[in-house]
Length: 222
Image (tube, rainbow, N blue to C red; front, side, top):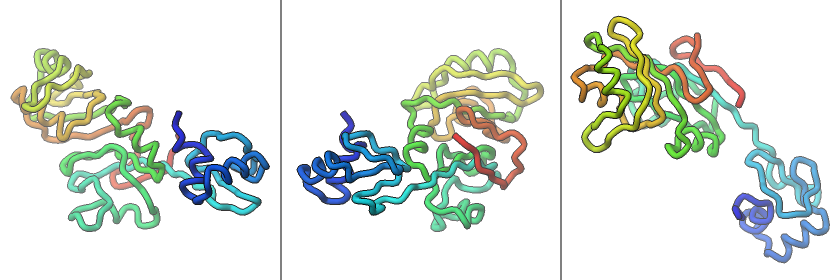
């Protein structure tokens, strides 16, 4: 049982009541979650407003979800201590975390949110969220490249999991994978004798970049 996500845990560990007092509050109907009286040790949602004896002890939190078209040349960080960071694009948004980074040379879809659990769900490799990329190589690949790429490639410290790869014509390929090792696609291509000229992420899970302009962002719903 996940006690830390239940209302009684909040009463005891955040409001510093004893277990006995917290249980008594619940039994007497003194606790509300989003204006609904709770008398059981129910699960506590991340954004819920909590009241005790009619007084708000935790205001409702509004979660926001942003998709951003990162230009090449920027680091995937909001820290102003890092050169070429992304803070200039989000001057009015506070408390954001990035869900799924891109290296400095890469461009395309980044997701950001102030909902930490959602960010964890997107980034934790255990959940295997699929990402899609358009990659331009320094020479035209053939079916032999696709076969080797999709089976998994030994990039030195790791053999990548099977993934999807398709030819788009010319020097371009489309890649779909559920891993997210550092510079993984670049290293896979390098191992197979190709250099990446450009890499653009176009999709994470069910969120697509679509026609969003470079350097622009917009809200989306989950």
